[in-house]
Image (cartoon, rainbow, N blue to C red; front, side):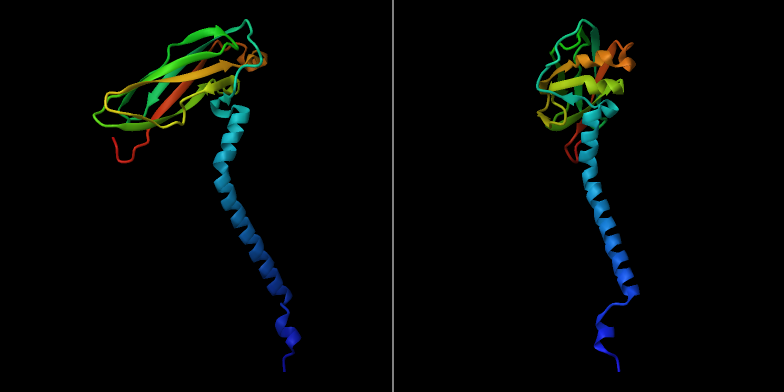
Length: 188
């Protein structure tokens, strides 16, 4: 006859298997959670460090203006499936710290309405940490009717703290580049 005590209490092997199963389930849940958090965490990392030419977001320049001048060149790239032309702002040179407003001009060259968005980067990458945007059209969907053109402003300044970065001592030009993508599905 089997006693009730031996039937109801798990053996050390069963407890070990249950512990391993709980640990494995926790690891799987943790990995799923990290995969969902990866994009916002990476974006936060890039914004804090300027990694990959990511610019900073600012309400305005509080560090003043210094005598060193820097040129900012503007560039645009257009995805092959986007029927737009985009004219970047002309290169500008000014003292570091001066708040600037420039415009890109986009034109829909197709015979239908198209919605697009843009991503950006700064070169050299290390300069991204000192390129501060106050206002920008990046990541905002823009819909243009056939033949329509629109000015897309960028308000920015270069943080005077870049003058203290040895890797930027010889840099005289920073490039702000935008890549435009079609966000319409099934459009060409």
